[in-house]
Length: 92
Image: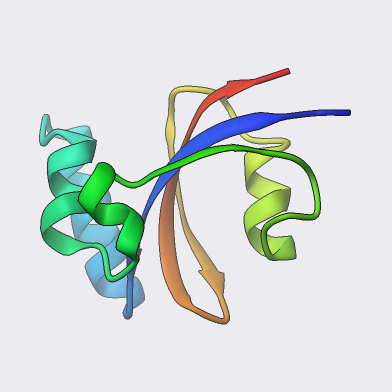
């Protein structure tokens, strides 16, 4: 079964998500941005979600994690929780 490791930043608006993505692509550390801006408790650990398999996250999140480019900041991804920036750190 596939497994992935990812980290994410959850914010409430698409605008905030796009602005953070621009800052990260400009050099802002992803983990620092997660700690400062994410509304998810994982923000305290740099946005790390650990290892998980398909179906453990909501569909929109899963679709990106299991098909997106590894090591690239992906998003905004809209889910029922808000807007995410996602970085897939590994996938097997």
